Length: 441
Ligand code: 5AD
Image (tube, rainbow, N blue to C red; front, top):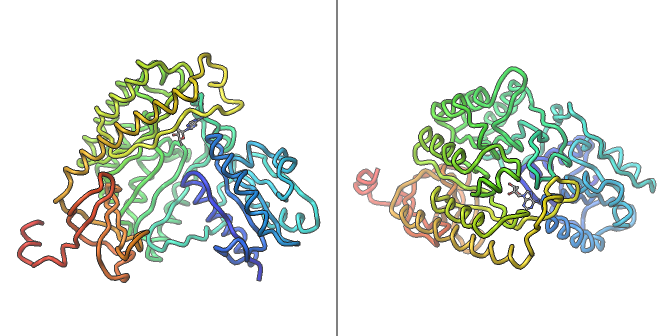
């Protein structure tokens, strides 16, 4: 019996792709292991979106080397593999194979060749590739990622993804619904649809509104999420579908990147500040109680103090529940590299610090206001520390509660009893005296 270990970096689509790779190798009789020392095949599924992500992987490759016994095979897969291709083979001698996001079918063959001493890179784009026949090997029985779209046709000037994941294409709606129906029949009640600009989904016949309705109608699907949407792809049809599909969760991650229209234009985002605010208002109109998070880049080339101030004020104005903040990172081959006036590293560091302060303050204010409110949570597993359980609301808030391990994978009603500013402590309503439970409902 052969074993495979996969370490996954980066976005949720990488998590989903790793499940596909376990699927591809599972068909060949491989068994998954969590222990790199026990693995016959070691794979690192990588991210290329920032230099920092790549440096971390290179460092990790150095550490993983010690687990590679004679006859073992080590591979770099994913976006960094696609970006660097055969150069990675030259640069990292312990690497036997390099495979980009469209090449995972080649895994068994390239592993066999590596065992014969042939190192290889497989980095061609395959516009048709959806791995439709590969059953992903998932390990969470309750919640599943379902990739519905691969690649990206947008050309944000900072972003490497179009160069690592190739052109955009969508799976057929019937294929997605079939997969979700099989998941639901097996007990999965939460699905997250994945795509680089997921709400631009179009299979030639059906758009994202159709997809939301169809997936939301699958028996047993109680929570429907999707990530990441592009602001201007929330058409009225999509908003109506969200409003009319009870499974759609009251949470959207809506990357804004900057609050300055001038910067957005140079990023080649397809909206300005006001248009983004209009999308937020439309979403909040369609989905009452919506929680919102975002991605923000600081220090994009040419970003002035005034531009940055607009980002700070946008965070206040939208009152995001959370934001993922990044210092602009130069990505070779992207258009932004050629823009003048790159922001010095110290200034980026200073700005991201100020931004994080505002993000935390805004989130804390919102979250303090939620203490005392009741929510439906899905219990996900044991909390990282202590002997509490970790659960998640439809609005994507994390709550820690006391309860038996048997609750994992089930839905409960809880009341928030406190907050750290970002996460909550919660009390299961079923533990409260019956008359109070009814009063609070
Ligand atoms: N530098 C910094 N952040 C980046 N992102 C994408 N490209 C870059 C870059 N070159 C961020 C964006 C995106 C998130 C996934 O990563 O905010 O939404």
